[in-house]
Image (tube, rainbow, N blue to C red; front, side, top):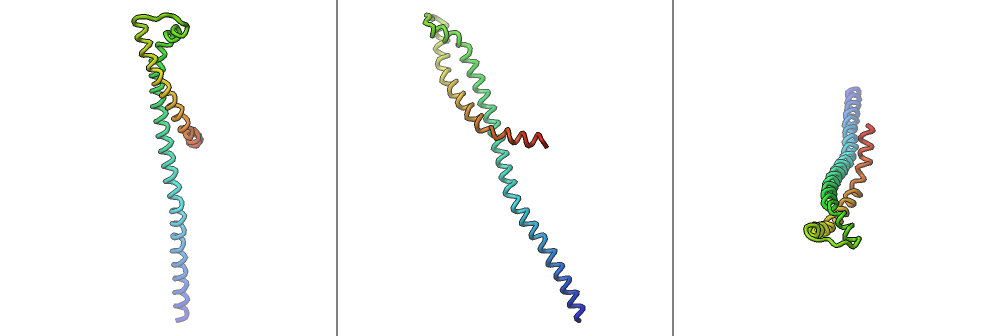
Length: 128
């Protein structure tokens, strides 16, 4: 009977050791899971910031083009020239667009700052 008990103890010891290993592995896995969820959220935030930057850039380019068309008229106005007729209406419209340009530029700068984290992510991804 002593041998049976010895075998039983060895079997129980082996079983308890093998059951201890998965528990330890689960703990390690569970500790890694929040980090990967955090990383996924960071990646989503970075991708969203890139999309915002792209949108802001498109708006800025459109408004720049609109205002750019009247730049010579603004220059003439600032030089003190008299502007009449259709050019004056274009100038009025263009000057109103300047506020949109300032807002679009500000939005673009904000989006650009937020999207800088993407540079590190791209470096990491492209090195792999």
